[in-house]
Amino acid sequence: MNEPIRKITILPGKDKSGQPEAFEPIDIEIGQSIAIVGNTGAGKSQLLYDIERLAQKDTKSSRLFLVNDKKPSKEIRFNPKRKLIASLSQSMHFLTDISVEDFLKLHLESRGKKQTPEIIDEVINQANQITGEAISRTMNLLNLSGGQSRALMIADVAIISDSPIILIDELENAGIKKEKAVEILIKKNKIILIVTHDPSLALSTNKRLIIKNGGIVDVLDTTKQEHDIAHYLNWIESHNLKIREKIRMGLEIKDVAIDCRKINDGH
Amino acid sequence: MKFIIFAGTPGAGKTSIVKHIAKELKNDYKLFFAKFDCIQTSDNEKIEKELNIPTVKKLAGDICPDHYTALEIPKILKQNQDKDIILLETAGLCLRCSPYVHEGLGINILDITAGDPSRYGPILTQADIVAISKGDLISQAEREIFRAKILKINENAIIVDVNGLTGEGAIDIANLIKESPDLNNKDLTLKHSMPSAICGYCYGNKIINEKKVYQQYTLGKELKSRIPNLNCGKCGFKTCNEFIRGVLDKTAKKEDCPFFKKSAEEE
Image (spheres, rainbow over the protein chains, first blue to last red):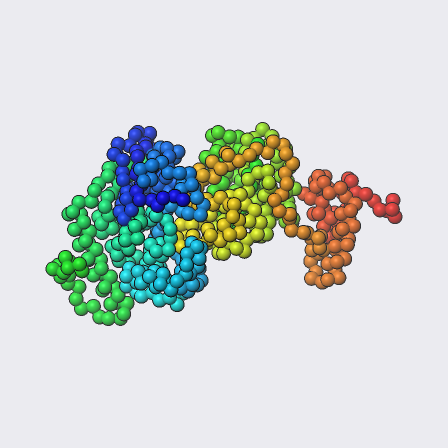
């Protein structure tokens, strides 16, 4: 049996020009979230690829990964029954014509887990905390809105998937409470990697890895001030989401004034 | 020499993925690429032009493309004794068969958006490697369900996630190809028998009528017993079956076959 992943460590390799990367070993622990930022073509995909296979200087970047401070076993790297990374992206859709409940049961079955009503309720309840439009167990998967689909995918990954690492590729504009989504994943002891330039998301993580020319050129610990900014931006977004729900319900919008005093009341 | 067969339904991304794999191999190995299809294809030309490796196009026309592939394999291998790796891409139509051989490597490119994999036959169940394409378009949960279903019907499969656009997974498959055994001039054996082709329709009958189809079958079988079934091509047809059709349709004469054995009364 493999011991559960508590921490992964990235050791430097080289960038696209063959120059060695200059960063100190980067520790990422469970319950932490990391933003990966950089221009298109900067080398974000290579980093994700390295993480996915826990590269042992055997990829283009020559990076080396440790798991719980040790070299990972071959079993943990290539087990076909267990993927290390579960991913979520804007381009993903549900394609199965099935009810939410049956779908979750099918997923539980495929993971070899018990199909209890409690787990199904938990997934749906958590999803409903992420989206403003309530999901019920009898809804058809194909009829869910973009926000509902995204919320269900996140709750499902947090609770049913075994993958210890969650990769999120751009989550903006999906009509979901992003901060809540990340919070749910963190509570389930996942390592969260987010490729994003969305300020509210990027600034709410623990660290930012800056990618340029195929190399990690900087590692920024998110400052207290940045966390406050993220909190503020998230508050504005949740306010925006509330107005969105009112519009959906057919209400007249009379007032968009933002009461800044409420920001620090845990909105 | 290594012999690799890629099979998968049309549109699964076979050619793009083969291209990425060939790119990983071409600097260290002498490659040859054979593309089979039914009516028309220019995929081999694309690969020849972009990667500068020799290719051939083989069109099955009226014959089952997998039967045709099996008939052509010995010729391709004989003509390419100087190569290190032969990459063969099938037409990939019905889900029943695929001409994988025990002595080589069989790779199924499986489009994850095409639905439940349980309905696939030997094309999936007999594959050594299952390369899942288009995984970036569907939810994590569905990917996990899909994976579990594949392992249920092909428990020894090595599953690799591939992406025809980014080339994801190509390195992994290239490495598996490098590790695969050489043919060493052994006789090749199919992993699964081909579907039977033994009715009048196989000999070109078009009328949906029990009696007519039997008549055509009897005539076809009789002719077949009098030719060597070498598919030598001297009659102008690609295969003996097509020649028989031609004789029955009166577009060819028996005498066009230099080996035709005349019956007692014809003598």
